[in-house]
Length: 178
Image (cartoon, rainbow, N blue to C red):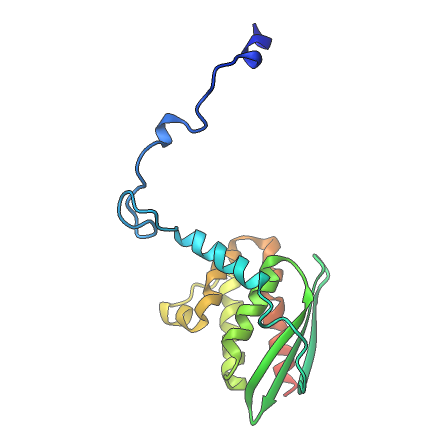
């Protein structure tokens, strides 16, 4: 009898009946039946996109600051290179290896700090690190972080916090030397 159940030729549905209903209405999903991506899907895609991007991942000729960051607990490692002139970050890039979160966080950070003053960049690093450590930021503060705000939920994953903040701590350390 038990073996017969596994040998059955009956095709079973892959989805439970209760799950066959239109998408629920929610601000994340749009109207019932719409095929919009959820907010978490968008964030996941954004992280994947940044972690694979090579736009900011290269050596930077003429770098005035070079700072190595390393997370010994998981092996993430970056070298952040900056061109700082007249108190402004003219250009930035990084090289290194690590998980998708560390690589995406570094790429997002570089997009955010290019063209900013050293003081603005340090402020953004403080905001980001506070957010990842669980501080609730205002809408205006989240807006300042732009795409990097997509990493906000990392604060609920203790094992991933160090991955997300590696580049931001490295930036802060580098800029303190400036």
